[in-house]
Image (cartoon, rainbow, N blue to C red):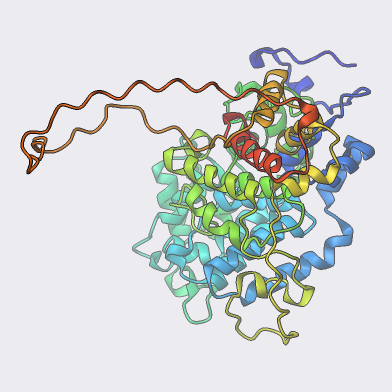
Length: 549
């Protein structure tokens, strides 16, 4: 067994940090399986966890890198159906299904990362066609090479609309895209000059989009063909040259590696030296994203306490992770779209060019309440409709989108009967024999491992205590009670004269708290006990540690 990495990250040898993790007997356990599935995908179903434990780390990681070959046709079908949707909500549902049903969770997870990196919003683009096409481009390159990725995104029509490319003309260059391609997409703040931006903007003049056919076009007449000096190099540079020159800078690999580290490993900034081997590998591989991601996900540092629970869950991670691990049968993901927006992440609508602010910025009083409400939805099973749609109606009966020129399909099946797929469906699928087994199954679904002894004791006490279950809603904000406006109204006089002073009511006796039941007296399949299980699971999903990835 290799010696554990030092607890002080500054003392960790970078070569040891990124060396492959070789788990000894028993080290590849539910804790680390759940950790890998949360970071490289959107959580694991119980069946996926069991399969990963049986196959081992290397085979599991290989599946993540290549995707499920048996699901390739389904993924292609899912991708094709997206082009027919004309409403943003339908497009969001479509991508959520691709994330959970496409058989390639790592690619979808990286696509989510790049969606935030190349932040573009429907709010300005106003075209589901363009947002869909951009998403397909992102998913195509999510695990590819960064140079062609950046070039394709520079020609992406949604991006051109988003950053006002048609206003970038010879003699009056618009600097929007030139600035964002350096500051946000490739180099980061401080690794370019204002002169670099001005000259790059000239090189990008004429990179427009045709407003009628919604496609990229290069307008030669509006392109500045003069010499430009970018990063100290002079030439008759074009947009392609700007992309190449940005990727040639040392800062490019460092910037991208630091962002991927924050997304996959830890949101705590690491010592600069720790990332040097990754940046060097990334640069030498000509920006091979898949190779970099594989190094990170298979490393000793990734499978250490330096990475475990060191990221705040994005809303999509929070919602899909809860659904995949906890709900016995698939639920309509159209039910997830509105909660995601309330948690702060409406897909295809990042707030600005910098994307969503991540980390603890995901958490505030409003978004925590939204997470709490979604937790209750998962625990209680408040889904609008259940059952799996037929392949020909993969999205038709889920989000009921409007289709344009859609291929013919069979009539939609009748609505599935109302049913509740609540948390008890998943917990009791394992046939727990006693309360200890129920608690173990609950914590396994939530965290991928058994809860701490103190937490187990609290859960057992809660489940054994009779009476109404305690709510899991956030505590009310602290502070002084609001003062009443105006004077207190005088006491009304009785027609029979002054009201006699009433005697104070006798002080009620303090009720004795109910005593926990004997575990032998509890019927696990009773409605009362299952109600306690739902309340307990809801409360556990609202704990701070559950918000961590």
